[in-house]
Image (cartoon, rainbow, N blue to C red; front, side):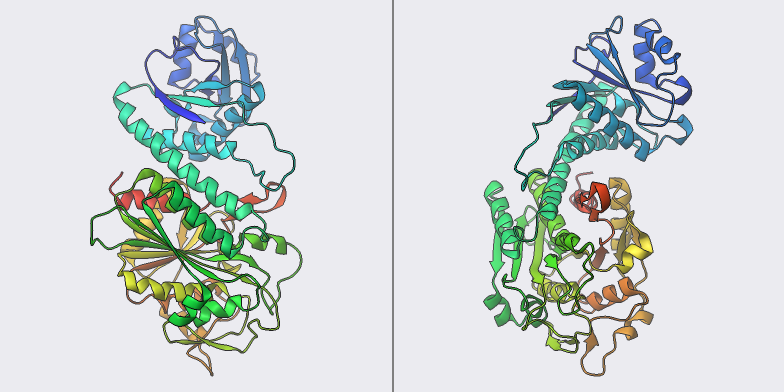
Length: 497
């Protein structure tokens, strides 16, 4: 889909369809009022019949509105003006785009960014419009025999009232497109079945990304390489699988030479059956999403490369499967991590922290400015936060503030959880330096405490995305989160905002 920024005479701008917002009780935001005045009250007369009364997201298509160059006008309900917020704005955008695709219009002029809620500046209003449009255009078809025809809407123009804001709006357009492309990549990887999206496939996707963006350098460590390094924790997980583990390393050197890099580490469990501690059968198919952290790293790297961000960025994905087998980890086994610390495996389904801990130790060689790991790590975080916010764990106050602010700005929110020393004793083991689980209580916290033992040499934060990386039920599919949060954080770190 193509996007452009327009300003100037709204009534005189030709378009197959003009999109305008309307508040409850027929209150008109400025762009809609402008068109109503130009048409000598035509919109008010139509709205007076009550056809658009009701909740936000309802639509009404009008033809041949007087004094307008646009062929059609699509009115979208914004709900009560006093309750108009970013979520409602997104709902209105999505409803308008869905209606447009039904009409078959190839192009539209959208004035909704000029009617955005007060909490959104023009930059965010435009960026949200771009990301919403591309999100609604995404459809999974890779493993379907019949492909749907492409979306009829091919060009979307976004109207802003002040030409002086054009430069900022174009920046939002560029950022929004890159962000949406990263989200789409993360979604697609997550939605692929485990027999296609294997650790090797993830490595292949990283190398394909390097072909598209030559600035990216990719190295893939094989099991023999990891064994020489001493990654006993990571390799213990892959022993039950016929698919070899991979450690995928991606380097984008867009910053100053010698500047410390930012590092993103994504859990890449391409399928998690739980190992010997087998998961229940219902919904086990959704464990193909256990590589959501790795998918988000690939998506974020793609966005950073498209934007040519002036930062040094490293993406690391420890990738494996976790399956039951005669050679798989057994409860009670003890493994030695790359750090030299030993781990008693009390539950083989707590495998994500085993592959992450070796990857986090590996990060030390880069002397990073900051490391964020992203993982669908615990069901406990879903119990704590549901499917709205990702769980954030860090002892670094500055990093916590940055990530929370980025999540709010991107509307991909996180909530800070405790990482207190009081929880560490729950990981005590009689037979090793630590156990890989701390019991039922505070499971998301003790998982983060486990990871913290491998991150003493750099600023670090952990995002548990088990509740946000995918949705279940009728709309089952990957969400692409937390790519928006991560891209926003990188934009801030790179001085792009």
